[in-house]
Length: 546
Image 1 (spheres, rainbow, N blue to C red):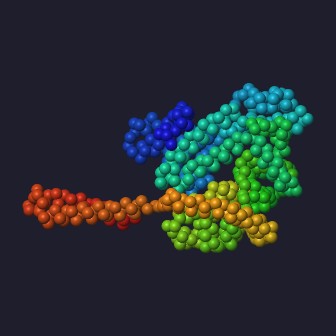
Image 2: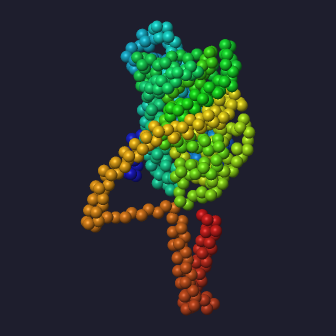
């Protein structure tokens, strides 16, 4: 990589903004514990508050918010990854909001005209210029089609894609630099940013959200308890999405619906079953089940909004999720520990016994609670914190599923505090077992295995021939990579240096090599003291196991 990557020089102005904001909040972090009162007065947030009065996690959240849309989205994603950033920071990042100032009406109307090929007045019989809401990527307006259908129109902010792409290029370069640091490399910063890039760029394409809605509608076509908004492809593009208006109240305002005939407990149960079906039956789920994305219609039907953020699970991931939840439900601590170690690729020096003991202790604590008091969200958060303590990193796909289950648990409890997700998952255990043992699934696994072995059989002869040719030509090399051996090697070298210095000082002293001080070699005394200091320092480091 060049000394200054081309991406940074091309976006020098934005890089300057990012560095300036990071420097400001980093300096506040450094000064917060000191007595430098004069500099503290000049370090203020965008709201005018003195930065040094805030905690470090709060300053990180404020810096992310000041950096703008891309970094706010990244912060929201990392708020679910306490195993990466620490749980205190993750909890603070969860407070990030993406509400932004709406665009001027003429800007929104210009976007609609350029995307749909005709003015909004020709497309819609009515169009409310004042938006219902404005988030980081777009804003939503009420409208009415020419045939009288009430709709909502989601319009992307102008130039938001170009600004996000610039920030993503900068983030990718910073992640590559972070990969070079040994203490950061294990968190796979480049991989995290690359995955975040894919997710965010997908959110920018409203046609993808349209396809998500169509897929959800197909999966739940026979379910009369849920409703997804109908989309209008003829009035939708990658930057404008027109959807049916679903009327109702939010989960928080369930008591305000005058004609509601379904109990709050039943509504919460229906919502939980809806997501269980998405995850365990379809392997395609809405990844943002917060209260703002769920409404209760007058007839008790659940309306699901904002399907831009979704998750998919292949058979492999689904099996792991199923196994994990079944272990929690069955209070099988040792098996749960083995699954988590397999998922997180625990290294050879990992303390498996201690980790298994902690997980088993955790399961015992939650298992002693009555089923009606068992809180799945708290249990999953506790598992994630245990994983973080042992410096393990969950696969991002698994972390997303756990985040959805935790969020679902909190959302459902807004309606019914006594709802227990683990009791709802219980009936799925039988279905999970039947699906895992089904002939169709076993045949699919066998077919996949045979495909892989056919590939190996096809490639093996050629690979062996290339290996023999390299051996014949003397070009065969073996590359060994050591991991986490640096401290041990450094101590070994230091021990050899200390021994050599001690031996040398002994020879100088015994032979009385001049210059002398009271019949003792001065050089020998100096080297003896140096070797003694280094030896004590080495013993201290070994004792502290650094």
